[in-house]
Image 1: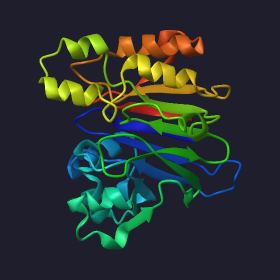
Image 2 (image 1 turned 90 degrees about the horizontal axis):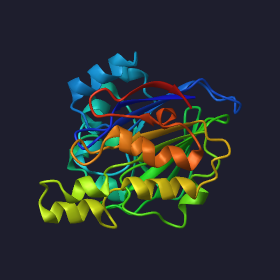
Image 3 (image 1 turned 135 degrees about the vertical axis):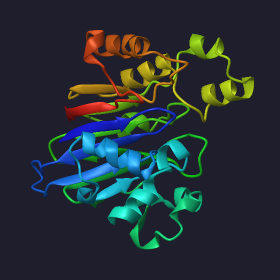
Length: 261
């Protein structure tokens, strides 16, 4: 398995995952987790990763916020790509109108398959209708995706067990957020129980997991104004006993190049 980010942050998100089949013997498969970019921009970013949109086996949607779902249905309609999402997310996504033939409603607690990939959704606390995150398993590698979550739940260590790679939200630094010029209501939303993870909270979540197989950690969904890559790395690396530079960062403009899962 390998994965790459089209971009990560409040201006648009997209994570591309590809497998050649793995030990499970499945066929090669590509899925995109979210697409918060317009059609042409999504196509441009996919091309940067040598990916033709028509080669995608599916788009996995986490929730209905525009930076995650804004470009999903235009991309799906234009290239005939199935879209997997919860019923609550579907009901909260008016952009899905006219895309019914491509929609696949999922159960947030039930595993399903797309091509050669086993997809394990799990619910998370976030200010959306029925948000989920995903573990993607090809039989050899297990990639966990955990962004847009306001606080850890008791279920996380089980859902994110024995990963080989993890894309983990490090949205903000508490001091930078407190000193920013954001309105107080927005600061409360971001730091609240249904908002986004602060660096230290992300580190505590990482420390709660079985990391015995973990080879890659990617800090993701960083706020341009309220976080920095060096702060995110410095929070996560000590948990694993790694050097700071071993923690990768998916940024808003350049995303993340292809990385082994």
